[in-house]
Length: 375
Length: 198
Image (tube, rainbow over all chains, first blue to last red; front, side, top):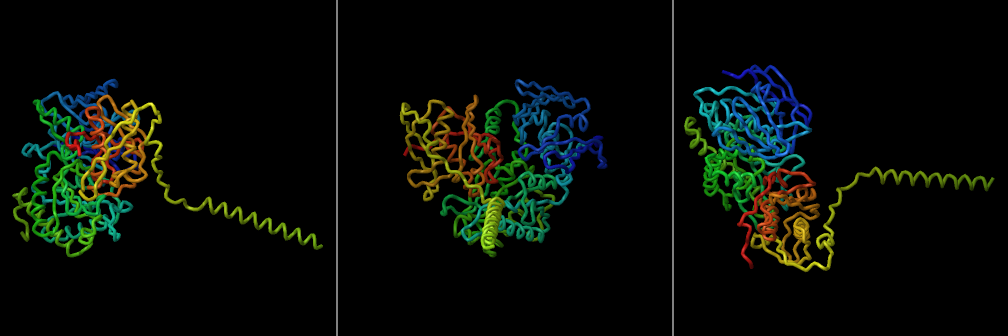
């Protein structure tokens, strides 16, 4: 049974997008203004009363900044400025990508409270459409698995591979000594990868197809809204030394070589009975590592460059709700790497290696799809 | 007649000169301004406070060695303030001012540290000028090198006094400095930042 209300966020002024509530047929039921803080969407808590639970109760203690929501029979404990969320039941501790905030005097929740936390706490699915700025909340079908969302209602659909050529527009990224620009190199490679994938019946969604600027949140929205099943961000590296060279594969891990405070605190608490879940990427760390390993093997077979694997907290990858990696395909600050990165033959080899890794990944993690054409 | 003609000529010259001056001033005012110059860190700010009563103390700064591709310790002596935030500010400003021994600075030229704070949870907040992001060379590797240089310098000079570091730019929390590494939250100082003494 579908819930009576859906949330729809309409495109409006840059800093105060209009949020519309619509029913399942897309009809607007209610509207509210959101806010953008540090590039992230925030919705007022009252949205929940109209869209999710008319009996919502909230209690805020300004001294401790503690915020308690009584929502559909559960007590959700939050704190303004803190990304941790707990409940009065044995649901575990969750980490929102961004903390609740008070903006212009209103208590606001980050977008992922709706898109990621609600589906984990309640029997609902939440669909976010970035271009239309819509969020749809529907009740889960009983026969669908609860977790992870990537294998829910769309498990029978075609695999969607999201390709993210970094930078673009006024943001050129790094620059080589001969003038090669990161934004151009990665767009060229992305188009080659897409061509190869399409020839092999792999659907591809690119976050940009031309020399245009995309903010990190826009890239994330394109990936999440299209319900991509793998996100690959392409970049060129740079170093303070012209000696640094090779390919680097980065996986988002807030407990990696550098550690965020929230993730460290959560890990220290995890010895208790509550399991800790870092929303978004934490769910997909193993799959991301698997893909990285497959890619390393493909590169080793075709590319004469060293390939290393590094885990770090990464800004774009942290919010995409699917397995994801970032590849630095070479150093533009290194003469030999730059020559390779503007060489069509090398780019063709690289695009083939990446595409073959994608095929292997699909076969490994989407057995229903089976071997893809050309495999 | 002749005097009249002379005065007319003089008047025309004066008017012409005035027009030229007005046009020149207007052009100068309307001319598009070039990129705003990047201010350099005044050396005197690195040395504050100037209280000669304070003893010199040895500090460790971490720059980048382009041959070994590693961070390398450089020792320096400063008259350090007694206050923790001020000491932190002095040391990070010394890091920004660059190496005395030819090592590579990992903080972009022109970057200025406005202020340093340490809260009750031992999180240090370092408020840099926008140049830290805008003048950065880009690339995930370079971004990591920059952040590690700052974190390592803080860790080694303030063992147990500072647990984590939040980078601010122009007083604001930012997601990243060059588009890759997530610095929206404080980054934790771990023992891995302790390098063996050379």
